[in-house]
Amino acid sequence: MQKVYINENYYLNVKVEGNTNFPKIIFSNSLGSDLRLWDSQAEALKDNFCIIRYDTRGHGHSSKFEGPFSFDMLENDVITILDELNIEKAHFVGLSIGGMTSLGLALKHQKRFNKIVCCAARADMPAPMKESWDERISIVKKIGTDGVVNSSLERWYSEEFRNNPNNMFQINLATEMIKKTSVEGYIGCCEAIKNLDYLKELSTINKEILYLSGENDIGAPAMAIEEMHHLTPNSKYECIPKAAHIINIESPDLVNKIILDFLI
Image 1 (cartoon, helix red, strand yellow):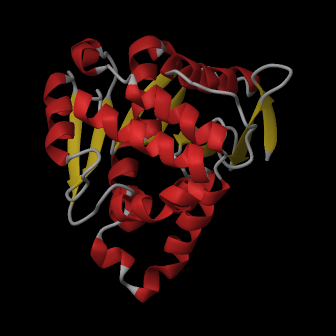
Image 2: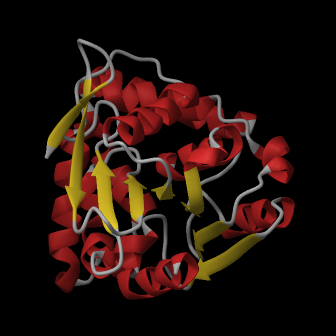
């Protein structure tokens, strides 16, 4: 682990694994999780890539940044990591808010990236959904991130996955990650998500991009992500059967194969 400083007061927690001579992949986690979200992908891809993971602002072991955040901030964090590690170009894989960040990077910083994988992420935030984010912000302000554990688990994983005793490790890990997320980091990211507005720009993306959705994801519905694919030139799209939001944990083997096939 290492600290990458955004300024003299704030830093991001970054983990680099594998042969630094290999092609680089940066992984970006979802709201309420940390870099452990990508453990399965790091293990599966380490023989072909140098794996770079980081905790989003206010998440995991990164600083408790004061919000609100914007996607410009979140995207510039990634560029700062690239610069600090002396990486000219990398692949980028993001899920949920990490996937939203991937769209901004594809639009604004395309020279710094090769291929991009956008998982379980919308490209805009319609008005009715903004209200739901205000409700979530209110809960976290009152009682902290403990107050969104149960609702998050219901969105993250299908009922079948949650009720399978063999998945208790992943459920417990998710619970721990959510509770560990700082109030400042959670609310700051919610404020960024409320203002998400990349849908109308997708036609201008000039990068190879793969969209992945979960068949049963209610937060980033498969239909919405397939529409994003149709709006984006040279993009690909895959839907993960039976999975909800955190597709890379619910269906790791399939997601690993799809990502590897796309990147190589």
